[in-house]
Amino acid sequence: MAAFPRDRALSLLAAANNHGDLAVKISSLKQAKDILLSMEPSLAADLFSYLAGLQSSPETLVRKLLIEVIEEIGLRAAEHSPTLMSVLLAFLRDNDTTVVKQSLISGTYIFCSVLAEMTMQHQQYGKVERWLEEIWMWMLKFKDAVFGIALEPGSVGTKLLALKFLEAVVLLFSSDIGYPEKSLLEGGRKVFNVSWLEASHPVLDPVMLMSEASRTVGILLNFLQSAASLPGCLTITVVNW
Image (cartoon, rainbow, N blue to C red; front, side, top):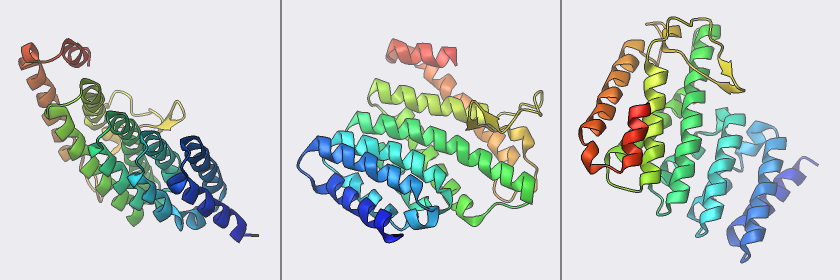
């Protein structure tokens, strides 16, 4: 019986990749996601390579949905999901802005969640598991790529989401010692406060993170200095933040 969900998921992923009807592809991927979420994480992880193979799908809607699936499954089976993070990173350079935008949205959420999880592990157990450190290394690559999107010419909608990520970096990496009791969970999602970190943290150096926040503020201020050459919505967004 244990083989049935795996075989069914494989069949659905094959249909999502190879079927000629887009509606069937979308439906198959959604059904495969539900099966993967119902499986024991280590067993579901055996199929992640097949899931990642969908990143070459020619259909924009399939690639966009794949990112949403990666967000949901990757966090549920985080210990086994580093390979999915490479797909998320690759989609930042997709030739369709719809896919890039979804990668920015999902990646921002995963970035915040991984940061909070690392801090919680260190607070509770005095260490951070190696698999989580590996995901964080992917998240740092994601961060650098998003900074590039924010600074390079491109779609206004994409740049707005990239700037939203920069805002998140500033908020996450700035000290908030006035609210040390703030929960790790807020609105059902993990949040983070750099003041929770200790200098002995094996991966996260609070001084370096706060320095990164200052550098990011400088980037946002540089945007304002070139406001005359920017679309109005970008300038307004940076001013509001």
